[in-house]
Length: 302
Image (cartoon, rainbow, N blue to C red):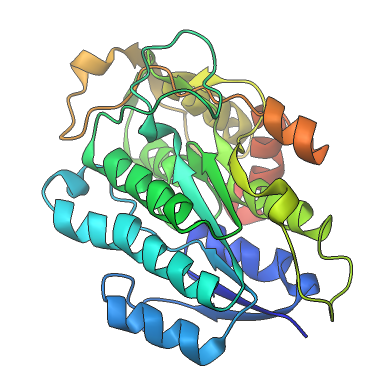
């Protein structure tokens, strides 16, 4: 039976991948304690011990603002470790999946970004994720690099959970309205990943091959909105369940909310290649958000 090594098992995407990857093989899921992505020896040791047919690297340094003051650590986890994984995968005739970000772009384009657009990250986080992309590509190993944006879910730390918490604590929320992108449910991302693989993993006993779809893809929910629009939709969904008044929501500009890391104003990513190459159509972001929030009472009640 094929082995799949999954990193970042306790993260938003990694948690969902444990379920969606299970039908495709024997999933060995590891977190920081088992495999320290900042330690090259730890990365190599785990891969050589497991000898996987596929590495799914959902582990990452995701603290965008903190990365500005910890560039070396962010680069070790997001840039160096994926390259080591790719080298080890090549030795094993295996493949690798890596999750990247809309922050590899500077946001100056008006239309949605396609995979062939030139990256130009504005912040350290984006620079490190781009370094990870290029390190994997340089090895020539079969790979799927999946760029996504504005990931949220029912666990961890993300915009959805932050807005729910602030709705209980504050009477007014000022939210940026001039950064535009696609909120993406971590479960949708995990399910699309597995759907891409299942098209080429028809036999659990046969060594997998993704060579014919190897490459870079954008995987985000359909449509787009601003952070303000995202917050408004969240509050609309929970207002009927709340035992208190919803806070007043006010749109502001990026310049009114300075952060250590610069963000692109346009984070829209085109998923046309995903549809063309894999026949997969992504759900609208509003649809995924409602599904996520309706999944459990703890999500719909603030």
